[in-house]
Length: 115
Image (cartoon, rainbow, N blue to C red; front, side):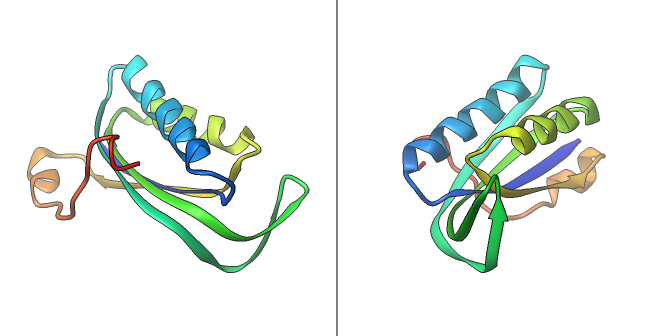
């Protein structure tokens, strides 16, 4: 199944974004999945103040990771990101299950270098 992870990391440094993206990608690869690509959306203003891990956040570093994996791997990524104190928020969206559905998914993804 093709999934898309949209994550918001606290706005401290780009290195934190790279570390979290790398750990999420490693989880996918370790469980037999495929990472399709990453996109960095840079540091953006959050829609509203967010209180997470005893901190208030107004800005965050956004990134997107597309990956193919089973639902168990997707749940493991959710559990891992939920416990990470550098995370402000995230969402995992299933883009499709059949090859015909996934072939029509638009958008661009990049290798890890742009992050």
